[in-house]
Length: 57
Image 1 (tube, rainbow, N blue to C red):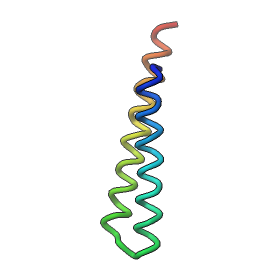
Image 2: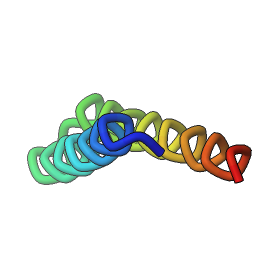
Image 3: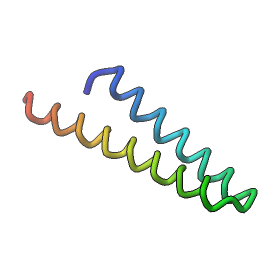
Image 4: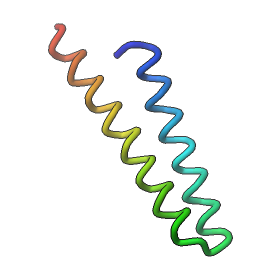
């Protein structure tokens, strides 16, 4: 996994978790859903990069 892609995945996961927590705190379902979606996007990016790494070995 390239360092920049790994960082992007982690950032998406972290920002998503923060949005989800903020949404739950203030009772904003839209923000909570956006946060979950962003976390899943980061998870998918991370999984894609790990698959690439496995293919290189």
